[in-house]
Amino acid sequence: MAIRVGVFGAAGRMGSLVCRTVAGDPDLELVAGIDTLHEGIDLRTVTGADVRGLQVAATPDALVEARAEVAIDFTHVDAARRNLAWCADHGLHAVVGTTGFVAEDYEDLRGRFTSSNCFVAPNFAIGAVLMMRFSEMAARYFESAEIIELHHDQKVDSPSGTAMLTAERMAAASSDWSADPTQKLVVEGSRGGAAAGGIHIHSVRLRGLVAHQEVLLGTTGQSLSIRHDSYDRSSFMPGVLLAVKSVAGRPGLTIGLDALLDI
Ligand code: NAP
Image 1: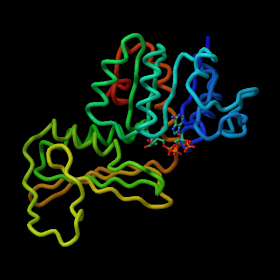
Image 2 (image 1 turned 90 degrees about the vertical axis):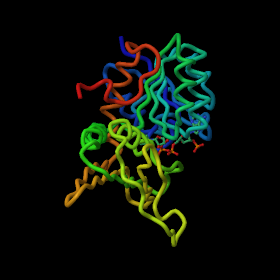
Image 3 (image 1 turned 135 degrees about the vertical axis):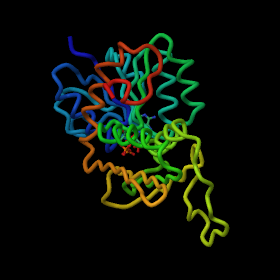
Image 4 (image 1 turned 180 degrees about the horizontal axis):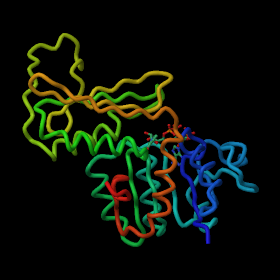
């Protein structure tokens, strides 16, 4: 039996591609699409997904009516917090790609998802997952590190969830980072923002980009650059499908695609 899937943010850049991807997978059935400003419009017209007779809904109640088992959320963090609380209250599994969550959000989700499960990944691209893993492995061999994340010019949160998670994992792998030598800031913010371990993150927003990140590590006489580029949103889809098919078997909250991969 196909897994019945609903999508929050169905009209968005990610959500519409997710709808097309779910509709094209024989193991899944797209049963609802929710998006605030597109209520009543044919879901196929909005997303290009190969479905008939479905209209975009404005509220999550459509998920109950459609007997959805899994809800996918690619919206904005404030909306995602509300959507996920609703999913937990109504016993739906959730797969979340929305970024901008902080540690308190994860604690909140852990407490809420008791009768259904929640899978959150700030990055569903396998290459990005490997980039984080390699950065974590390299961390203890270098004294300084900076992260440059680069995204399209419509991204509303900064730094990216991937950059934040990368810094957290590198800081957990090593606490031996040299101090920032800067004594005079000529332009406010020119050193980026200090994340976990004091690792600086620089956010670039540029039309034409999708999602990119370079981790720079330095030690005496050498440096290492670890870079990942998502040139197309299709790079995220295999990870999203894997999460949708796995979430029912992972009790509570799971964070990061690594948990589903043998790395
Ligand atoms: P987007 O094009 O702005 O799409 C977001 C959509 O969500 C919009 O259509 C928006 O509708 C809708 N929305 C807002 N509030 C809603 C609600 N309460 N219920 C249902 N729909 C709602 O953004 P995007 O580029 O697709 O990105 C979406 C999120 O995915 C971002 O957080 C981004 O960082 C993240 N992302 C994650 C990954 C990953 O691998 N994890 C990859 C790419 C992007 P209106 O605009 O009409 O209000």
